[in-house]
Length: 256
Image 1 (tube, rainbow, N blue to C red):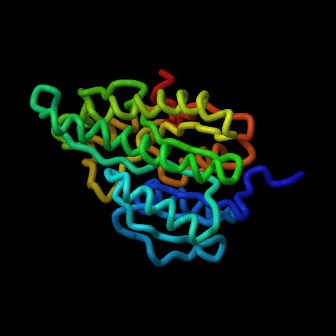
Image 2: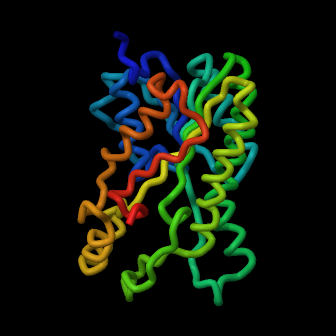
Image 3: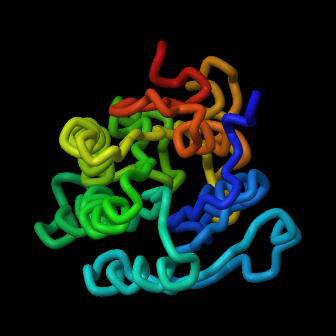
């Protein structure tokens, strides 16, 4: 039986591929033989031991700008000849409470979540049409499914703004819409919804981490490698009959 999870000779574009979760996905995809195009503002992982498994190509890209996205896909296609998979992982935002947030901050946060996904999806379609199909894996969030519990945040500074949750909920619905409307082009569209994966570099206080752990059924937070399997499944032939799905990887947080 063939390896259903093999990504051998597949070309994958990962937006936000230099970030906390994105970097783990790049490693996982390359370990399965993929050629990965990392799209991010800066390259924070230029030197890598796993380059022996696949090929990595970095393209600086500002996902707030359509022209920058167009150049990303053009460079990827010029480098590898085609594109098979798009992973929409990148997100940018603006913080603030509902009662204090400006119109501009609200719009920036929503655009940073769903606008980036929309623009990349729109611009990748001609490249998928050229090879008779493709795969899109979007990134939602548990806060696109449930509300943050304000009681666990306290003075941690880790508060999650409403525009982020609204944008991520939109990503999940946009995934379903695109799955239905792009199926006739042989394009599968699915979503991964992570739960608590706090980045240690952002120095979340231990008291806050304890609260996060206690909100999950498994009583711990996730680590980046634990998101890789979900992405690999949806990107690979193992999910050839899966589209319009939202795969939640949250330690049971949203299942209580």
